[in-house]
Image 1 (cartoon, rainbow, N blue to C red):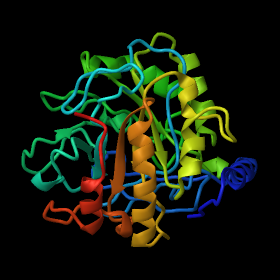
Image 2 (cartoon, helix red, strand yellow):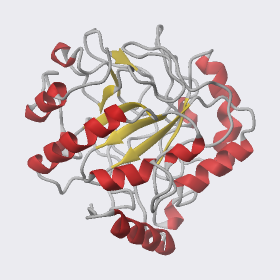
Image 3 (cartoon, rainbow, N blue to C red):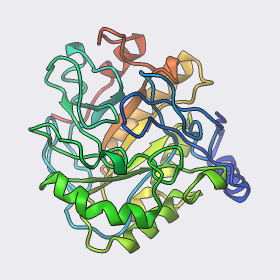
Image 4 (cartoon, rainbow, N blue to C red):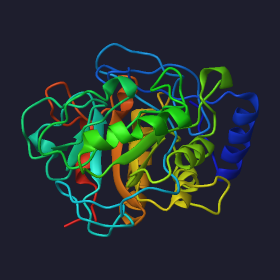
Length: 326
């Protein structure tokens, strides 16, 4: 995937991508169980146009979610998390997106994880599992008892992913709210998409604007975003308003950065350098409620977890970085 030296070059690339309908992203399959990704780079420094690796991989790319309306104050208590409308100082934010459950060595530095599915795996380690209803086919899934939050549709603007128009996503929301049964709901996980003929809209900001217009009164307590560009300035530009990009803070809801790392072309040292730059920013940004590093087979140099659940060398770095929570 392409990396950008500054926000200006990122902006130019985003415009070129949208103009040429050449954005892309990826994630896992409609069941959210064995995912993967393939494809081209995208404006968010994202991976693939979707598709499926075998078990053990899922990913997505640059993206974000949520806009304007929705019931809910945007904060809820979870394992290691505190109620906060704006993200909240003192909230334990650090999580992992992976098919392999993090082992006990990750706790308490890592307080939550998810695997693009409604159910987790692995031994109980004190780390909160957050279920996801990946697409419309997941709406009949049973959520684990004790769940604290609900993640929703994975990159629905990608036809190779959840594959829902904004209007379709809105039409399923009452069913999703019933399934949540009072749990705080995280909005669709969004990303730039392309080529245009493989997308339900290339621009995630516009998708979410259309979604909220079609879903007046829907409960959306948080927005979810994905990002795979390998530098801190573009991450800030992606989230914050007033820069070259519109920023997801515009939607007025706390943000879950549910997938981020460098892309698959980055070395292990690149991954570590970006991690060390990005995490202090995410810890200190009160608009970011939670974040989860992408750790799965499609980006081997970004993996945090060995097959037995123990930390990789990069996982040890992830554990060691300072946190702002109690």
